[in-house]
Length: 254
Image 1 (cartoon, rainbow, N blue to C red):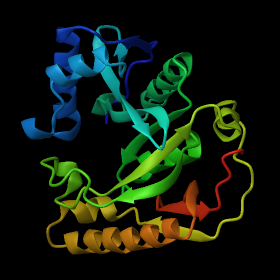
Image 2 (cartoon, rainbow, N blue to C red):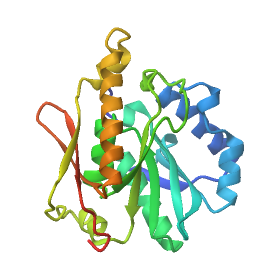
Image 3 (cartoon, rainbow, N blue to C red):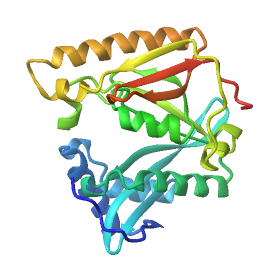
Image 4 (cartoon, helix red, strand yellow):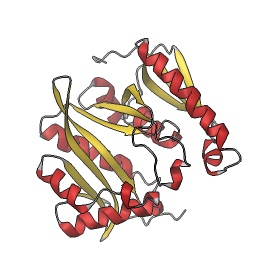
């Protein structure tokens, strides 16, 4: 992986057709998806006119990444659902995803939202760590095969199971993390682990059954934990790169 040049990344709202076409092309570069999995210019245009977000991260004239959110309504509350956050391979691990999230949060708060949500793959260790340990999201819902079959090679032919991240934008938990403070200590009642080898297993047809077994077992573990009132409140990675979801009792006032 190439290291991006040390330049200032600027975040801008995207509004024009040409910018939306670049977002569509960036999705293909990131996930290798077919047309059926790519959000088109027309959808970006509609959502931007309906109160959603389309934010781009630029390195000079290069669109290095973007974030795309739609307005939602659930349980009597309006919120933003962040459907896509994508960063070009050459710009990964440069903090651009986190910068885009911060920009989403600033814009959401300015418009009066208290909550943002998004889905993520429970088998993606780095993404889970960012969402939970660094941004302070909590998780209380699991959806098996949310998007049906995917043409992206990164999915490895597995069902598109997803967890729902809840980002309570003004909560002490989130505000403290963004100030550089550690999450407050909390009793952990259950751990659900993901081995680092999951990436290799997904891409190897002869060992894909191992990835399927992890996904299936974790799916059942999450369903049972959420049914008993637990939530994902933390995430850890060990020295070998294995990941672990930490589940306990979530107090929205914290």
